[in-house]
Length: 227
Ligand code: FPP
Image (cartoon, rainbow, N blue to C red):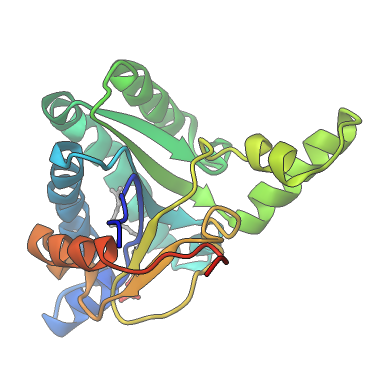
């Protein structure tokens, strides 16, 4: 049997709050540690021979329901983290991209996002996509609405290409922390993906565990509906 090739990896990074709670820390400490882990995983993916895209769920449209102090903290953390990670993007040859409605963020944060995108646009080892203020149903509905307004036919091909995600099906989705649900993440792009759920909380996730998951994925039997 031929081996599966991993080109597009997506991760739902979950469990920051529980990680902090177990240590008697406030939830935001879990987010800080979680943000650090992204660097290790990005380096691993940039150095990996076949991975082209890494998509990470960083803030969902539902996350606005969290207490204001936590939402404000996540916004500040994202701004600080992106600026601090610029040398990392350069070092690993990674290009930064986003999906989701970033117009919902402050003008300052939008500026930071645009600036990091522009400064990393030439890198080719990896595209790291952060899903920010992202919701998959909204992404699909907006894409269909744009096609309809232009009077274009809605087909699998046209709708798939109209989605904001650079169109490339996801090969493998990992969700950390033991939860087994999609939480409105990339519903269209995950149609034929392999799923892996690990009990590890995101701040404890390591490149060693990722490597084990990828090795298991490589040997899975993917049939895409065939036999
Ligand atoms: C889920 O943990 C985590 C998120 C809100 C998304 C991921 C956020 C980060 C990794 C940190 C910030 C990211 C960047 C890019 C700076 P949770 O709070 O839902 O954990 P819980 O389920 O244990 O409460």
